Length: 251
Image (cartoon, rainbow, N blue to C red; front, side, top):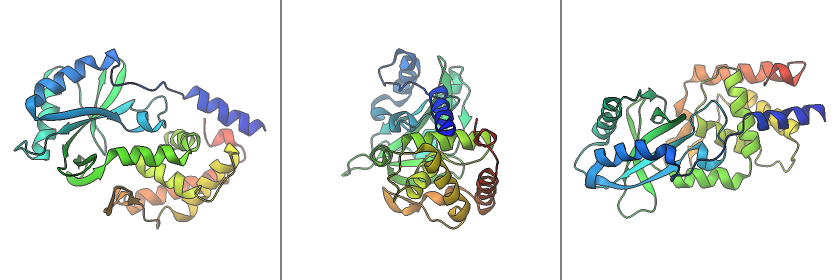
């Protein structure tokens, strides 16, 4: 019971309020984006951990998907580079990560993710993974729904806290899908046991488990990490399971 209370207290300590697109703190960055995009913009929507309800304190507060019309006449590579230059011109610092670049605005860290809307589809976009400069077609809304429907937000948030405590490279959606996989046959609501089950799954499967984008069967989410990066996650999961107290593992 003590461990259960401890994990609940951690969730409370790392809790962050959900941000709405109409939040006044986003007005400046939305104005810059609209001015930059002009008539090429389709819409803007908040996504990422903010919408999935898996955000934790100390991480990016959410991603702003900038949906561009399919007939922009500009490559996505150039769009991303152009937007990055635009926000830098307005005095922001662009922080790169694996799926977008982010800016800090009014105390919020917001990822900016331009995407080209795919004509004839519902919510499908072509986006750019900055680290590899790789294009992929996917449905960000489906990503959000996949996580929301899993009802595993607490376990996901705990694993994100653990990831940060262990100083691991583990992209958010990849992590979320691994937690869902680990607990897919588990009805247990005990946080401690579920946390242990996820660590065991990582220890036993992270290096070999193939994780496919639910919106694109040709896109492997598990390719976002190298074998050595996965091996290090496996080692940290194994060490965590061998620790004497849960306070040594996650804090």
